Length: 216
Image (cartoon, rainbow, N blue to C red; front, side, top):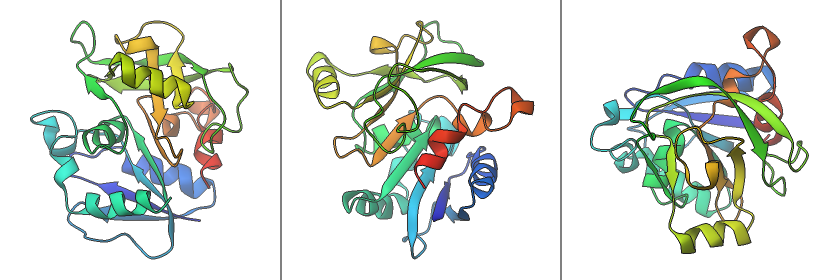
């Protein structure tokens, strides 16, 4: 499968993501934010972590207006798979491709550490390799990871099986300790933890490899 990784000014996890998908056997291409289309034959679009446009205004608020995002919206509306990690998750919520918003962390501090997560729903391509309720460990590195959605929206996420991952303890103030969600159609996925940083034992674990591979 061909994987397209988007690059905005300030993206800094694109090469990590590319390395992960090349290890998984995918053909990787990098797409600059000014492009108006995606490469032909792409099966997965990834919005990697970083600080797009310096996180000015709000994290992801400027990136959502980038020219390439029009192509991403069209790709997703046609059933194409889209994955957003950390800043990529923020861009997807700002773009309306995922529900909810990401606020500043409780305590207003940047948090960088390994965290334990519970697989809350595996009825989707992203987490199908894992057992329901399985605990995994992934690193986080964010200042604006505090996920919020109103009561009605939260009930909709729960009813539709859109809550993918939850922290096992309160890490950043996220409602219901949510760490990752998907859309109703289950082809757009977003999470704050970094699976691409957990693909080799020498880096501390391989819990992220299966979820990245599942989307291929």
